[in-house]
Length: 492
Image (cartoon, rainbow, N blue to C red; front, side):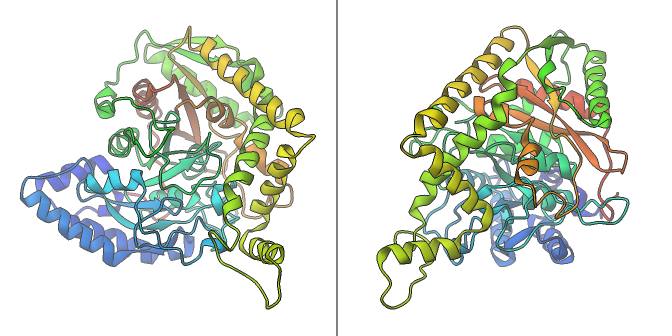
């Protein structure tokens, strides 16, 4: 039998339908892979017993002719999604031991469609990071290795999800993207990552980082898999006021392979100073692939791009400061206090012990920009710039169907390499943040290797609620690039 952990989501779905194997067999293979790759620290909480129970129930449903879109397919769930009765930590000490009595809407949709949960994937604490090194439960290791054998970051914040998929520990995984946290780790780990339009997937039951930016999406091995999984995740949710009341199309049907006559925009502002030549070459190759497939390549301008990163690192920390105020040891989170402590002492001790340095840094930045005297100078001004960034994209999409750009400014870097320089770490999001601020769909597709043999991704950005076009173009790019490289041990 083929190694079941090497299957794509679509292949596994079709194999289950034909009776080549059962969901229990598929799940057992992935549980063994999880055990064999624990050194990567991709999971915070493994749920093998629950997974097998779900797989048995799925096989029974299939036997009755009642199969959902993801029936019997074992996946990882980022530990930012509340899962009923299963520890949900957001990779933070302050939430250690928290077992929700409710299920997030996205995981509810997935489980109603038959998906099997293998466990809760590791992440940067409260999804704040680009390297997955800020987790209280330890950093995740990218299954890819550099030429020198050094351990590499998997990207962040959804690094555990990306590593789990790349290493064959899950057929697919959920991620969340606030400023690039699906697309950037997908690029670093050589997989596909899709950030849907803001409002396409419900945020209800997802631990909040920045409420106007957070969006759940699929992390998969192929573009087709992303289309399948998004169809099972998405949908309007009355419990979430930001959930869009729009129909969920058949995303998989959009993968026609035909992009003739489409116009693809190339933003000149993404040709940043000091960008590695191999990233420029990757981008040029992608442009050539789409042109050869019949698309028309058009230069576009997004003039406010240079302000995007600064805008993001005002808006996101401001919202984080507000969202994380609830974790005070009284309403939520672990409590730290000594006899005789005042309420203020208890708050300070609980938050100091519960939050890591990166979370504390962003809370401080956010509190500062929201404070009296600085609100208008920073936060209000950032909101105005954010609107200009959105208008830039709207103008560009008046003439093009999608935009092509790099996903990240480099391949995965060594663990610890940029940790002493937070600003340098933040620059990893330079290409992904603009689409997040505008609430647009973005898809990262692996299309080549760096000089050190590490995966590199290109990003497609689309119009609001036009994931179909993004996926169609992404499928063509995937086929043309013929990217088949895998981490050591996952070949075949």
